Amino acid sequence: MQQIRYYMLGEQALVMELSPPVSLESQQKIWGMVRQLEKEQGVRQVIPGMNNLTVILQAIPADSRAALAGLREQWENSSAAIPESRTVTIPVIYGGAAGPDLAEVARHCQLSPSQVIERHSAALYTVYFIGFQPGFPYLGGLDVSLHCPRRAEPRVSVPAGSVGIGGSQTGIYPLPTPGGWQLIGQSTLSLFSAQRTPPVLLAPGDTVRFVPQKEGQC
Image 1 (cartoon, rainbow, N blue to C red):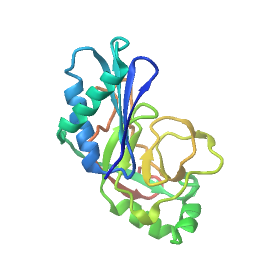
Image 2 (spheres, rainbow, N blue to C red):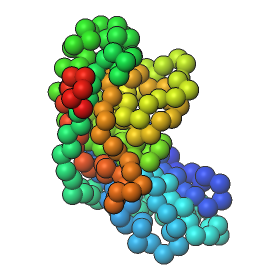
Image 3 (cartoon, rainbow, N blue to C red):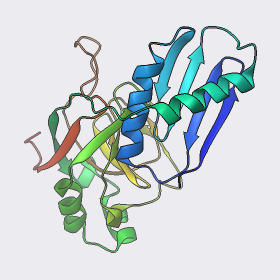
């Protein structure tokens, strides 16, 4: 059975944290809990994460133990929410300058670079949540044969559109930023634009499919 921790983060935030593994079933229940909590009086913001949820209150609770007990009760009584979703196709140029860590991922996984590309692009991924930076999707569904540790030394700057693998997850960097994921490809598709409504391309529950492209096609 999945273990669950409930604790205070500072004076006004409640945290619920599920132990591994990450599953779509648990994430859907977290989405359902978000919908419940956003209607609660005294709640300022609800922030879903991967296997966790943070609730920021309007004021410091008079009894933190009672507040955490209430969060536990909310979880026990919550039901899964399956949001309206789309399937979004993302073109990716794999390897070369676009994916400088492809060979390292292949070596670690004891596969050829072409096998890494084939397996990475064959899966259908679910957006579990958006975080780290505006529009960054944490995707569930990476083939276990492609699980690979993050780089020992993070890069000072990762180009926008970079597709990477970090542990058991894959994701896409919407904006240039420091990062430690293994970069296997790049897309020119914009995941975040302040001039767009909504500014973020993907949303929790969306399905993502990567399509290999040749240089100049993206």
